[in-house]
Amino acid sequence: MIFKKPEQPKELDEVDVHPDVHRATEEDEEQVLRELYGEPDEDGIYRGEGA
Amino acid sequence: MGSAGGMLREARKSLGMSGRPNRITKAYAKKHGNEFLKAPWCNMAITYWARKSENTDAVLPGGDRAYTVAHAQDFKKADRWYKGTTANTNRAKPGWIVFFDWGSSNSIGAIDHVGVVEKVLGGGRVQTIEGNTGNACKRRVRSSSVIAGFGRPAYGSSNWTEDIVDKLPTLRKGAEGEHVQTLRALLMARSHPEIDGVDGPFDTKVELAVRALQLWGKVEPDGVVGPKTWPVLLRVH
Image (cartoon, rainbow over all chains, first blue to last red; front, side, top):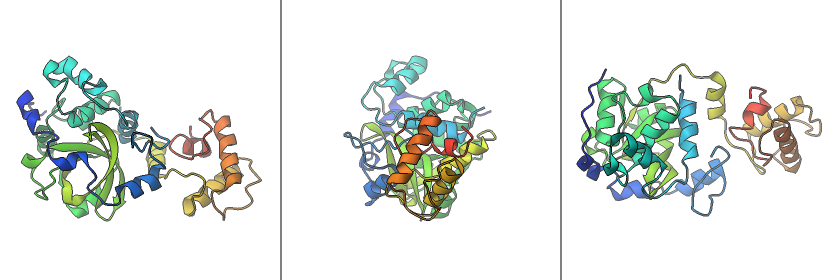
């Protein structure tokens, strides 16, 4: 059993901060996702059949 | 008992979720305090999907997490941590938790984002589902150069049909290749003699046969063969 250190809301200031979190980091991301899941919806979400 | 397939099914349900507060931050805040309602939510999404899919013990070895570094440390302490090398990225499995550092450091302290592996693409790349990327839940493609490491959840013994279906691609009209041959053979075995042979593309004739099979299997008849239609073809739904 792992002892859980209580989380501090301030620690979340360090989460999702790098610009790359929010953008594609692979040049062919759209092409790969289109091949796997078809065209994205109007919001740019590749849903495929499973979503 | 949960499974990697169950974890991924929950993650897929969140695709397109955006803004704050949202269903995921509200669920976390209800247990841990209102300060989480509008906080960055990538790790809260992992916590939410784990709880919804009965994978709490496997995915959250230290309990609920919103802070990425703490979650990665939990996997390290449980001896279930794999550095984000190219070799480990190629060895990852659907359902593994993937932590990002963006600076090629592979340092747990540098992690600020997390997602779940949906497909292993080879060449040191994975396709993920991530919460709070561009303020929404989206599919992404990431390479080992931005991956700090992986947490390997101790999923229970999974359902073999889920394992197979998770590895099969989504096929639609125009597709070609060996998986289309498999599809054509299965349609022939499911009383569709109009599919005259295994060699050939995913054409209009195949699409019509798929729609008929989907109606029979009570799956949305969209003519696309994906995770809901493969089990009907395999008669394991």
